[in-house]
Image (cartoon, rainbow over all chains, first blue to last red; front, side):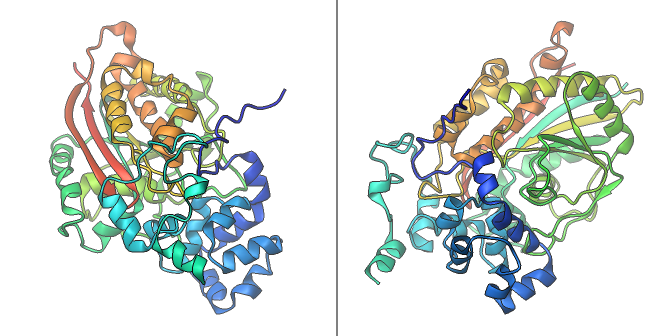
Amino acid sequence: MSLNKDYLDVPGTTIFDAEQSRKGFHLNQFCMSLMKAANRERFKANERAYLDEWPMTEEQKQAVLARDLNRCIALGGNIYFLAKIGATDGKSFQQMAGSMTGMTEEEYRNMMIGGGRSAEGNRRIGEDGDAQAHRQPQGGAGKSQKSN
Amino acid sequence: MAQLTASVYTSHVPAIGAALDLGKTAEPYWQPLFKGYEFSKQWLKDNTPDVIFLVYNDHATAFSLEMIPTFAIGCAAEYQPADEGWGPRPVPKVIGHPELAAHIAHSVIQDDFDLTIVNKMDVDHGLTVPLSLMCGQAQAWPCPVIPFAVNVVQYPVPSGQRCYNLGKAIGRAIASYDEPLKVQIWGTGGMSHQLQGPRAGLINKEFDNTFLDRLIADPEGLAKVPHIDYVREAGSEGIELVMWLIARGAMSDVAHSGGGAKPPKVAHRFYHVPASNTAVGHLILENQA
């Protein structure tokens, strides 16, 4: 019997299910290792060498080096694990979450102060909300990246 | 016999802990949020229980992908605040209550809920931020705490109905403990928030306030809300709200529904947007004699 994954049609959202978890096992376990101060220091001293100690895919390593959290999530990462990388970099959860939207830090912070992102148009793929694929990237940070 | 006196519900955003630890509570951004907890700090001083049963989720801290228990009860004598990557929060260690925890584990497992027993773990912001919100910058927490961790990180997570039913079993377990302890149950996490992808920053005030209304007056109906509704309406991390149903299920009007207990009294209700990425909700419900 096939499983009912009714969460696959939510735009801009990856649910961390058993399949994603299997893909991201080593990526996420690498992140866990950064909960020790000594490991954070070793990682910061030579990121590539530290990553090479883990049986992660090259794609996963590149996504970590680029701090591309959307890519990390697509490759099996979960935000609560990935947050350990952000913490190592001295980033807050707001900076990490905002980095996945294409907005600048200030744009994202202002959106939150203004009441956050509306669910309108963002409940199902195919609607017209600001989290839909055809409306990415959303802000100044993504646009400047695109033109580079 | 032990008595469940009240339940407390609150979000557990890590940035709230950072604001407290760094002395930022009076800043314009944070001031309205902490004002909403002024009543609660006094209330907890006036109504300090002997034990707090604290329902929260571990955020990839004590539990990596090596082991993912759906429901885990802390039976240890004490718990250290975890280093989540920023260094440990400068907050007191958490003193457990191994005797009551073991009693609840025994009772609830025999009541058909398969808990994982944890005798050693660190506790993360999910547990310490609610304590900070309710106690401020304390030198020691006001009483022992039983940590109860729920998996809401890797799907599938337990349903609202499962959590609600488990809450009932916990309520019955507490009521059957021989010592005359006053116990509170806290449900934490939520409210609407999403921390990932292009949809990060989602907030749904209407969903959240309906959730608060129904948690008070229609918990039975609220327990039937499926996962997908939380994801669509309250964001991928809004699913944490199922943990509030454990605390609500333990309250007398639900757990001892045959006993004619009255619905709980709403001692306090508060809602604020934003704290970092998240909508903050807070309730205090007192059991009526």
